[in-house]
Length: 365
Image (cartoon, rainbow, N blue to C red; front, side, top):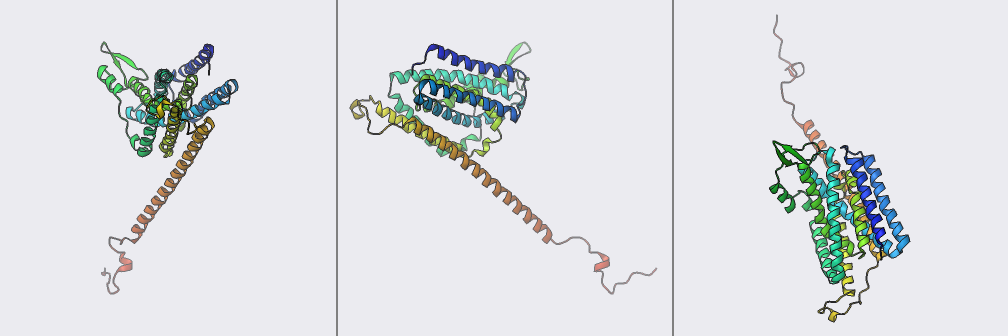
């Protein structure tokens, strides 16, 4: 896919414009977004991403269009997993709800810049060393196994990464938030606030996820332009998505298993592709291995969509069953307490007019 420079320029310009709209129109005046606002903006960003895919499909053909959609859906689903960590980070740093939009937007901007670097480095490696597909595939298979094995057990507590610990060690920090300021001056000294630290936490945490998602999307398309666009569009709507599904994240109890299945599938696809482009002398004498057919883009897209659908439906069913069981258990406990109260003996003196002995006489005046 030969993408002219002017197409790159228009795409990057559109992404910068959307970021500018977010910075000027949303976070400049701190406020807590409503569910309606988050829903409309989330739908708008998804609509732009889908429209971009339609343009790619019409201009470059169904192959590249399908690769973009598969990559975008995969990146979007993996970004939902990022939100679990974002929730933990926000809770750990006790970020006021009023300023969470700004934290997310700047953190996502940092992540977008760093991911772009990762993408171009990965593309350069792929162009020079086709054997890297073996490494990508093996890494994704390991990641899939680890995620399925651990489920959601590792998401109960946020742990600071090395970048964040270094930031705390090098710079003087305030103990509390100063509105939405990142740097303040006190007693002639310049101090950073928890607002800046939590932004670094969001940005660097997303880079950890990029270690999984970048190899995954390269397993669906090797076109650098499509990889960049899919990543950018999946990240741009993440802020609105956070506020839209913040209360629904706990209901997606099987999401880790679904994402593990997708990563494992793409890992297998990468290994098969590596065999088809094999140049390693100790594998088939350095010749290509074509006995196993490659997995097509429509099959990949179908597997991703079906896995996400099944994961969501099973998660909602499990949540509903757990809620019903909890309600029944609560009702049984209340019934047991009521029964125990009714069966308990009545303490205290009896009514003298009812229980007094018959031969007992009242004293005379």
